[in-house]
Image 1 (cartoon, helix red, strand yellow):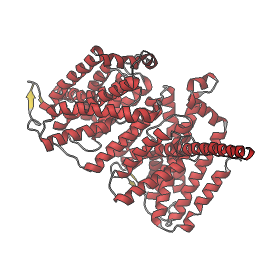
Image 2 (tube, helix red, strand yellow):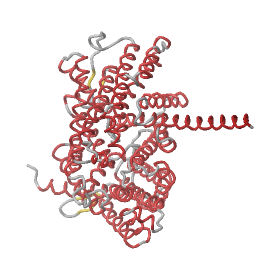
Image 3 (cartoon, chains in turn cyan, orange):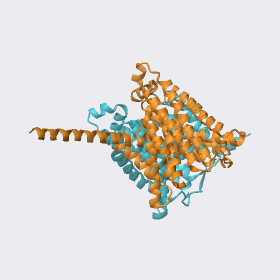
Image 4 (cartoon, helix red, strand yellow):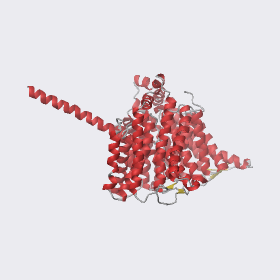
Length: 290
Length: 331
């Protein structure tokens, strides 16, 4: 039988993985909460951000943890422009069209990356990649611990934006009642684009936290996003605390099922949960609305 | 029956192509295009008519391909029987996914996600299960003959897939003209209103999914028979999920000829891109993605919708011109 000496670190590692998933899922759930569509371009944007972080380090020597302060605003702007000038006008306010447009953008970005950088898998060497922190009972990799802490910083920042700023109030107003918000003079197209920008900025942060001890290739984002879909559905689409808890849960499930079933079947475990949740409780564990 | 005549005419014209074109490369291109058109027609029944956008039609394509291949290779079943079994398996899978998804009332984003998830689960399972040949894939032994459904000549395969496309076109037309078609469109336009008028939305959508699954699976069966090789990345890969929805949307979503037109246009674009830049990975897909966004942006009805709009506009200006000439004559 597996002793707690193996089980406990596996759970902890799962929590650390879950934290990075949470960042990807936060962006996704934020966009769903306001625009009421799943952003199928999320994974491609994550791949793009990881390439950006990769080249920032390789070509300019910028440490990923510094690059985050450049890439987050950059990707915020990119996301804003994408929604404001492409997704919004192209989809004629039809949800089905919006899904397809994000899918089309995903295909373009992913294959543009493939075209530019080929399918090669790349990694960067930061001096601290293999450093560990000794917690007494187990060792944990430094980049993963930093990632874990950063997620809570990002979640707090998002919470502050949502609750203490005008744009946050506007976003929440549009999420609750689009027509009403429009009637009181809120620029809905602007709010949509701001939300999309914030979601994309989350992805940029996730990319910078991932790159020190992960690889990058043109389709790397997809693996994360499929997991993020599961998390978002599990936590209730549009719910931020749901996404956080769901992400940590999924991280642990993946780590444990990887331990018991092996790497590739561990992924099936996630999808089985995904389908089960979709079918049994489509509103998620924490979703309120019917 | 009325409405079938244009289909017969189009198929007859296309059937003559192998007598004019001898090049194997061109025939191969047409065979693949028609195969994608068939997969797209399957998507179109569910997405175009019933308004349920699936992002995972690879689930049906792959199931058709694997069932055909595995029955022949592992159980020695006749190829034609295997082909039919593949189609039946696609229909059965459609019934299962439909029953599960529609029972929970999944729509829009949720439906897109659940279909995507099914395709992914099947892909991962196929990449590890021993019966599918796991990572190696399944190879059908080369054994030419009508009985083994393997032909030396590309032209015969071309006629086979053309025949299947013809059947799918006729099926789409018959559905469109039947009560089922009206119900599907009612559900697409406003599900709650359709239910209020007594349409059983759940069973209508489920039926559409069964038909859709069977048609897309037929494309998968043909793939296995034509290339004699199936693996998880091909059969359940994202490429076919994307092409299956791309072709009807570009050609004209919810129209009989949309998928066929879309497939020919999309595949020509891809080939054209390859001719210009050589075989660089990714370029054809960049084009597909861009065309998808542009079509939704500027002609939401696809090419067929675009033509109709253009014709209306031309007719209007023609009548206006005629009226002004008449006026000039009177004056």
